[in-house]
Image (cartoon, rainbow, N blue to C red; front, side, top):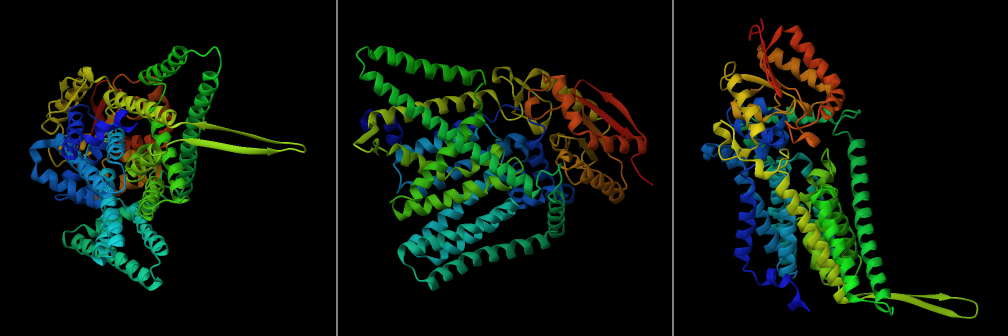
Length: 604
């Protein structure tokens, strides 16, 4: 019965207390972990967007996120990187509140809170900073909020606001322009409630008008503050990078392949786990009717399996992505059931919009569902959870007709059994999320108990990492200060944009993260910067791999670095040619970094 379910705790919890606890949970984890790559990429953008925007040209495809992040950095400069992370917590908490208020009339509040908790647990393993993914999630939810309310209440003003927020979302992350496709909801809803085609068309025009109006406002604003040319240059660069080729992260065939592989994988994961759960339940039913049945023996096997899963999670044998794929696949399956069964139009409409975001948002990311999928689950996952937990029983019957007889067969899974399956799956997944949240702060994959040391830099105050990583960073900062001062040009090669942020230096190639360029683009941008600036920058290079599987640096294995260098050999050759041609000399190195300086900083 419902009263016996632990979900009753969620249902009875005061909603403001629930929001505060989720907010507090996020804040707890922003004090540890130093990532030199993605976090630095965003932080450098925010640091430069108002003063020297041309040095962060690559980031302008995420322009509105830069405007928001840059404003926060301007207002709270003393908070440094910790403050940017706190801003990210505020954005995610805002998304939670919007989602809850949109869905509370349509879903069981206990299930809704549980599903939002799970999404937060997933996100808490990702970047904590304010960045274009968490800001996009908030803007997409606001868009859906106004679009849904506009259709339900027949309010053109809210439809206009919906289109307006699509524009803001687009300038936060250019592929979000796909959210214009949410306009399909207008025709879907209109068909079900028998709205005239003229009315649907008018609603579409108002929704589109909001998008056009805000887009015009933004472009005018860009022109006034000197950002427009930089913005269009970033689009041209993105187009060049997405033109195809094996090195391209954004080629159309690469994106399509990633999409098909990822979503096929999610359905396989979900189907497999559901099938195993059903078979295990049917086997338990069969054993229960056997004379040798002993409840304690069945319970021993059941809890033994749960314990085994816990151990596999602790050992890292079950990856976080496996859990993400399972929940995504489960969401896709249940959303299909909602759309093709007799369900209320409100839930169908919300499910359709949630499905649209779930399919389109990861599509345009270079890593697809693997890295950004969680930001597309805010709407669809709570609806799927509510539907799943509302299923009381499962009964399947089929008839086999033969020449002289007719055989009937079937099976049934009772309500208590379904509840048990659901609860075990949720508990295992929550346990897994907590394990990975504790162990792996993004690209600083160390035990949190070892993260007790700070780095001597004003931008990194309040953030702790391991003694070894802090020591390597402190050595670099002390030595680089001999060759760099704020606003100098500096090239951090190749996955260390954080160095530009914490040294307050200008990215040399209009991009603090040159690894994002394929080899030919890297070469072109490198020499273009030389031609335009007439300046040779100080170059700080990494000697080991610092991302992905090597996120535990300086403990990463030499084999990882060796294979990484081989993969990046062409770009490395261009970098070395540049150093040799311009008479650079290595002036310092430690186990992680090396510093190169030119004989003269000015090119004649």
